Amino acid sequence: MCNVDQLREKLLNGAYSPVFEKLYGREAARMPARYAEATAAFGELFGKSREVRLFSAPGRTEIGGNHTDHQRGCVLAAGVNLDVIAVASPNADNVIRLKSKGYDMDTVQLDVLPPRQGEEGTSAALIRGVCAGFHSRGLRFGGFDAYTTSDVLKGSGLSSSAAFEVLVATILSYLYNDGSIGPVPCAQVSQYAENVYFGKPSGLMDQMASAVGGFVGIDFKDLENPVIEKVDFDFSAAEHTLCIVDTGGSHADLTHEYAAIPADMKTVAAYFGKQVLREVEETSFWSSIPQIREACGDRACLRAMHFFEDNRRAILEKKALQKGDFAGFLNIVNDSGRSSLMKLQNIFAASDPQEQSVTVALAMASRLLQGRGACRVHGGGFAGTIQAFVPNDILESFRDGIEAVTGKNTCYMLSIRSLGGVEI
Image 1 (cartoon, helix red, strand yellow):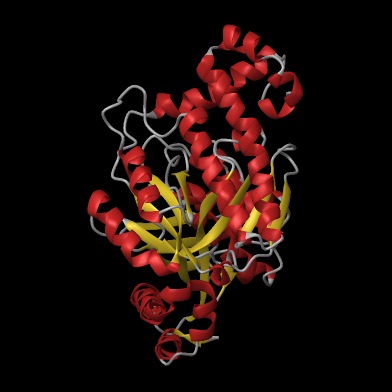
Image 2 (image 1 turned 90 degrees about the vertical axis):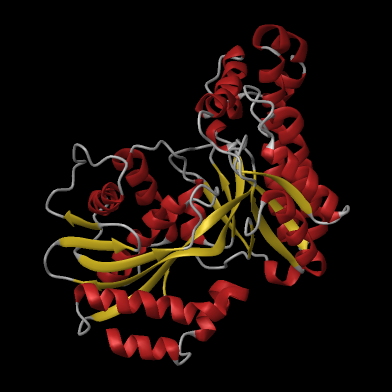
């Protein structure tokens, strides 16, 4: 291990370049300076003589299964090369002091693990919740000091909160458990922290994709024991780039639109006496379309159609990648995008039809791709971001063309990161 000055020297002299190439792809060249800056910031806060270690956890992107997880369906997700990093060192104070760039220091006393009144919705709640999750599983945990910085875009659907939770779990795994805590328990304690301590009832997809890295298929049929499958596919060899485009639309006042999707799907499930659509026999659904339309309405019927078809598409996308059939994978992604437009109807809000930033961005992306690649809504929909798989030979023209509509620096060119939460 190194102290602050020794680590900065190693970073700036290229000692970590091979691992940066693996984690960050085309962005690797800027990482020595980024990590060195974070290391220097740690030294100013906690002392340059401290022995320090480096950690990273990636953001994630949803690839397949749009709005299927809340019906206990299947999804395909992936870790990306945007991440949260930490410079950390253990302490003997039984306290976690964590300073994130641009934010006040979080100080969490570890002798108080139950949720604290007034802490909900804060990063301190996430830290405390992860530690409580370790404690409930009989895993070792303890104090540390850390400085973190993130380039996971907030509000982009890349899940910055999950990356932060997984980062804390990864630090505890390496500092106090010799790195023995696997990605599944790291993801589970992270989800526990977000649900119980932060107060956000999220599923497990975000945390699992960040903890595992690469492409990962998840089947949520059994919520207590989801089936996790890492997909072995080298995206860097596919000669495409994953682009996430910020369309500029606002999520403000759209809570009712998001809430209506699971509500509509559960209305159809209830028609069959079930809680969620995954419990409904699909053949029974398709043979009952006239009755469902009358009992539940057309929109609910269409959204249920989307669930059954996109649930299957998430599985087919995973299988296509496993076979190395990238062209087939792209076709399924495009099918998913069309289904979100026609059946799921989460491309724009019916309550504000004049605001259609996602629709415009998808129309432009489709025009710029000229029948190649793929594009679809990204995440919850209605506003926010789209996702596009862009052939590398037209990447620059795609970026210029889409940013002419969505604005400069709104097209983020990403790669799929093969590793999840790690010590560097």
